[in-house]
Image 1 (cartoon, one colour):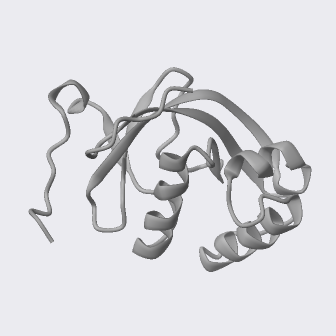
Image 2 (cartoon, helix red, strand yellow):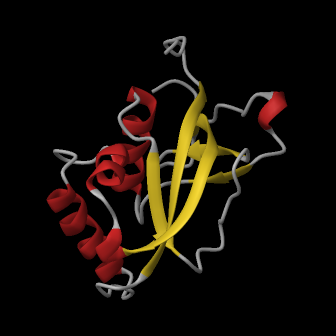
Amino acid sequence: MGDMSKPVPERYRHLRTFAFGDGPALADELVELVIKGAKTATCSTEDEPNTSSPGEQWVVLDGSGEPRCVIESTEITYRRYNEVEADFAYEEGEGDRSLAYWRDAHRNYFGRLGRFSEDMMLMCERFRLVEVFDDREPEKA
């Protein structure tokens, strides 16, 4: 197993932290998609307390609370669930990356939170991967 708690590098210790999703398994799955470069967007309810602004960096945690990477918000827009386009769904990086998959996954996710409606307003965020915390060097794009 190795030692579980990897400290966040000094230069990132002032950043806020968060995990994607609503549970450990989803948090692990989504942070892996970020690290692989598949996931460069996310969305949340418009009243999400963790709103960010373009240029803000975040430390992303996995399902066990370990810091895995740093992302930087590049764009925040607000749109309704039923107005999210295929390109944004693709950038979310989940499943087959189709709009149909995105709609199903997010209907289920917001449904679990008791929040779903077709015209619910979402905070849609695009981000870039800044640094990965592990033994591999992040690949240069």
